[in-house]
Length: 302
Image: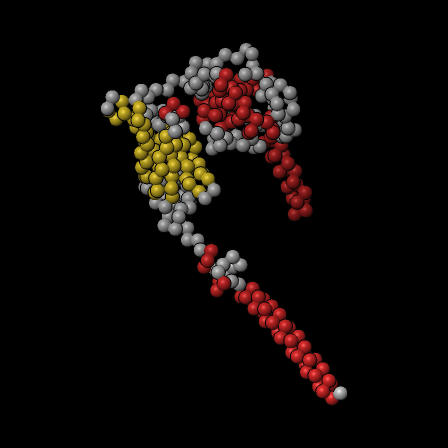
């Protein structure tokens, strides 16, 4: 019985794998109907081309050339009829969420950058007509600021964008915001990008085991991902991580440490080597002294 199961298991996994590869990629209806918030201009198409070259070319190849990678499921040519028959929302969803070999780009590219990739793909369809833009409330004020609030009970960080309109404080509605945690070698994005609600607030879910410093503090950076506002971000040090008690490099014996913290074997090797060398030098000097003494005695006897 065990023998037959051993033979059967690889075929089961092969079937599951082949099924997952051929299964149709179903996009939720509400996601299919999503449209861009800006026009697909020549400038946006050019930006999308640059992003495509960096992130998509290796699998999808050059549009119209059909030189996509021989993978399963097939990446396909973005200029093909099958690709172009999809809605803008479907393309945007697939770029955002990914599946199987297709990576997720929601934490790599901003929302605007993902739409720029869609714009570039659409540039190969001569019959394409862009749908009416999604309406987003445009903020009419200036002096935009970001407030950061930590909701410890629900373990979420709330970012609130506010601005001044005719000397009155007003919320910045439906603006894209991104949250990062500062790490040693760069910033790590937390959760996906969010749009502010009617009160100008965006809610980010924090990981349960987010590492902090020695005291459990994490430095968060909230960035307003809207070019029309300029480069606006806010940094806050919040006690929302796990304390990370790392040993100092000078606390343990290591080759890079000070002399009194050097490894024992290294100290023994070093001082043993020095002692051996000096012992050998002293031995040679003694032998030379004896030879000279013997030479002097022979000379005196003659």
